[in-house]
Length: 311
Ligand SMILES: [Fe+2]
Image (cartoon, rainbow, N blue to C red; front, side, top):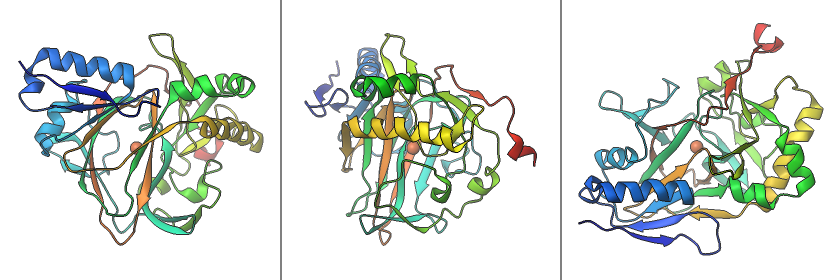
């Protein structure tokens, strides 16, 4: 009989658990699998410690929570396209953006977001592991959409409830209209073709607030890749989005994961936002991420891709 040991990640937070004892044998135990599934549903983030660091183990852990799906963007690097189609590779290649925050140069920085915002279909969850962890930075931060919703100013929260938000894959920071840190400075823009191809591409639409099956409401929007509101790309639309986002960021309580050897981290992408804090451009960083199928059924493609797309 296998056993896992579950502890809160941080007693001050509404989300997150730390789990020891996740082994190949433990994951064959249906009792353990059921417990892990419940834990992700209840706590939103699970940090597994001292897990065997192989792709096979990462996939096995991922499949506890649902079937893997291939990433919707073919150009994204895979760990092994033929044998592990659900495992993508995140590195700082030559096309990577460099930004400066508080005067510090950073590579692989990504602001708060949920994965697949740019797609009509979401993904339920993902398992991350770090293969090359920089000494300086490279953390992954998480924030709970249910906590954000509960703690927002009620007047602004009411505005958030009305927003249907547009996203696409143009992730260039120079195109981001709100939500960049006050001390943000763009040193080098993303050089990948995906952003350029999506410059005027069709957008997905996702609600800024949705209700989980348990009735709890989730604040679930981000500024990264945001192209405005459904039917409204005006300055006024971005002002509404910025007001709501700034309030969300003001109240969010953050867990920042500092990677240690043996870690695998899972998050509920329908509830929890994440941020890559960035790392020293002189150092290598490599993260592998799985893509676990599962959707909330509320995303869609914008009906009319917009006058810009036709132009
Ligand atoms: Fe992400």
